[in-house]
Image (cartoon, rainbow, N blue to C red; front, side, top):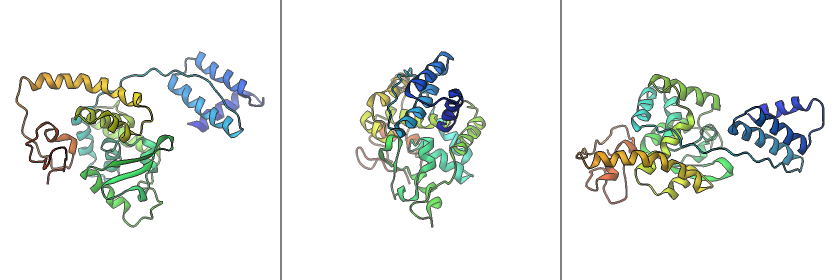
Length: 273
């Protein structure tokens, strides 16, 4: 993306030497052409990197309106995983984003040395180190991809384009063609909040530097929590379904009912056998 942005900038210069002023004019022109704020941020980041390399500082404000992320039902995530279960690589790609909240780039760059027995450790966006515990399903799916590989080798060995293609393929198969890779990360965050996980913990798991970025998910989960409460007061919650796939979040009773057999001690969840 950044390379493409710089090539467009080079073309717009028409042989002129790049300067901070010309970069600002170029970005202002893109804004006048109704480029989206998100696209403008890509161009700005590319030019800021270029000028930083030259020892210069480019400042160009771009306001990106905050939109609540789409709500992805747990049943949709489970349908995706079920479809991909027979294709180990695809299944692992979906699990990394849906069960650990990895971004597309983080999924691609995850290295064998960062895969522990119970958690993933990697450097995410903004060069921030992150540790994310693994669900049982994720731990089992990732082991074969690490076996016999050196610590500095990537787990998957695919590019971001493959990640996008995999998500779109299974999304179309379950009737949600508009689903994108980042939506699985949204689903991960929203589900954690619905389960009552402290927002500071969610912030740490997602690798957000600003709590305000994490709080955008509260507007999504809040609406659906209200609906859940409406149902709660009119019907009796079901017994723990004890899922056999190791999908910890489908077993919501673990968090809602202290007497759940999947919950051996208060506040601690172990996947059902």
